[in-house]
Image (cartoon, rainbow, N blue to C red; front, top):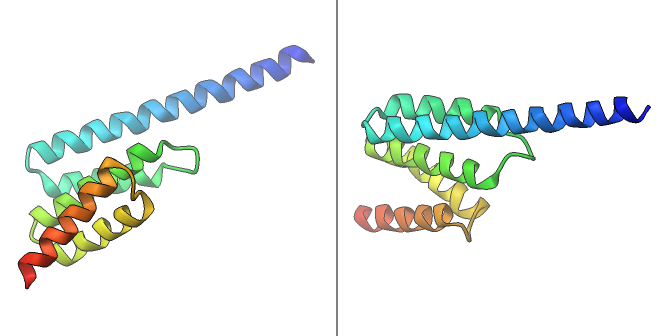
Length: 114
């Protein structure tokens, strides 16, 4: 009985570890796309990666993906859409570096509009 419970627990732990590695790999790809200026691909990858997130996913990765999506929309000239992501990020993760950067971008963009 102990062995089955242990094996099941070990399997779940390994699956969670694999899921985390996949999520981190997705973030790396998003960073590369952004760095290459491939904003449309970056947005698609960020959306795809976030669909695989759940309540156990690292908040820092989710925040980073939201920020990159906002940046890509912003740099692609889609300012209104970018602001939605900056607002979401700043309210969901207000004390993180990503949330603070999003709030700063939002403030900067709005001051340019005046």
